[in-house]
Image 1 (cartoon, helix red, strand yellow):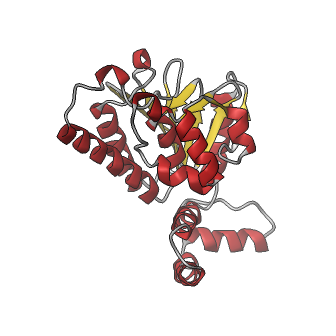
Image 2 (cartoon, one colour):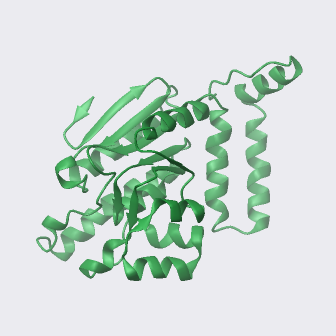
Length: 259
């Protein structure tokens, strides 16, 4: 299905979401954000979707905010626009399914932050990332001020935000921000391999583990221990757990269904 600024495709257990404004390097538009939210809402309750892959059409992943339209909106319009972006980011963290960002070319500003909101990032070896907000006198939006310091620490995060200089993918891979680096001609193939591998895993467990890890940043050890305990009570009742135990006893590979 193709919808203006976003291409939505179901490829078996994988939901592919492709940002589709290549003429602007996939800069965000209201339609794109609304399309992403609608697709994720649908995927949240679709038992056939086990993994979500987010990528960009054309030469880049996303340039973030559309610089050509900056300065044309007043404070109220900006407030509303970023409110919609915030709803998207929160939905990405709420959905109990792995989301993979597959980045090529450039991921800048809120485009970089959109990738950070995903659960994993794989990237082309020659891709570059930039927190370019300060170049136009702005601060981060889309959650970068939350996500990046937790990954690399506050001092380095401040350096990247203050300088706004492009960061090679290799540097972010070394820092643990990126999960995998591939040549640009192999990126799509390798992303699909990773997504299919996840899709064959215990989807319920992956979803709950995602929430536990995300909650850990704002929780005490005691709170996470109790959340793990309560979640495990639910997990032992799942079909995936029963299948995993049966497969172990029968010395075969488990066939998980995400249920």
